[in-house]
Length: 340
Image 1 (cartoon, helix red, strand yellow):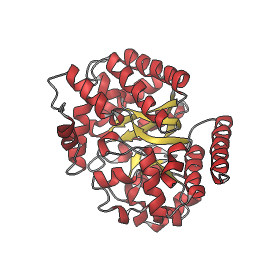
Image 2 (cartoon, helix red, strand yellow):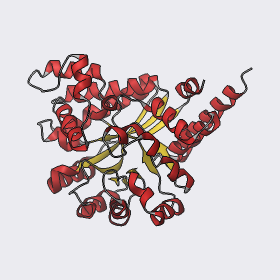
Image 3 (cartoon, helix red, strand yellow):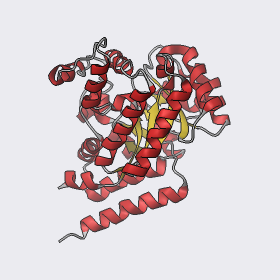
Image 4 (tube, helix red, strand yellow):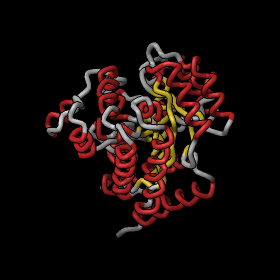
């Protein structure tokens, strides 16, 4: 019954990657168009391809899929199809993490890339009822050159759907403070700061994201549980963690689901949102992640609806849109609980 409730629950998602949301069908289609790619076409081999040994291997696989997106048509197709998958899950609003640097350096002109995602965004809202907004993120493994280019695209070009500025990729050997000038530039034009931190490194990375990058939300933040003072700070300053349980297991950031620190975050009063990160790559979706979170936290329908409200509250929607989506969640819960 709880799974049925989750399936119909109106939701927002705040931590989900653009290329990482490519469904097997789309990956296979792109691979067929680009036969020089190492990404297999066979569904069984594709599943094996998406079985990660560790975080570094995940990055290698992720970049192989990135390499399948080679022109503006690929970008538009991928973006719209992601929205279609979201609509099936009753996702009303999503802040999609997009890495323009990866596409532009592969030869897609920056203007064509922006036009493609914006065209898909407008069509998705009109035709599917899914509102998309963008977080342009720096691929940390590509160094300061990628930070400079991402900031240029975000600040000097920008687009209507852009709301935030992020930092992804491996954390080990990629210290957060070096990216401060680029986050300062993005924040100066009103973009929100939402870097990944503390996924595969310790709590200091999260402190750096807050102090140096002005983080308003933290991507993952898994290691925050190891620092009681940090948990207290996150709770006091209402800095949400974008929690992605299945992703953390798949990348070996957390060894076992039973050991996931989500319960510790909630117990400490830290705002949490539930997200799918790179759903097809991890064999999951947002509905599944809500079910996982419900099991970890021992939630009923009202508790799950509370998680959905958390995501709306932590989003960068305007206040009117937040009220409307929160009301839709409340009305859905009331309708469900009043059933005979």
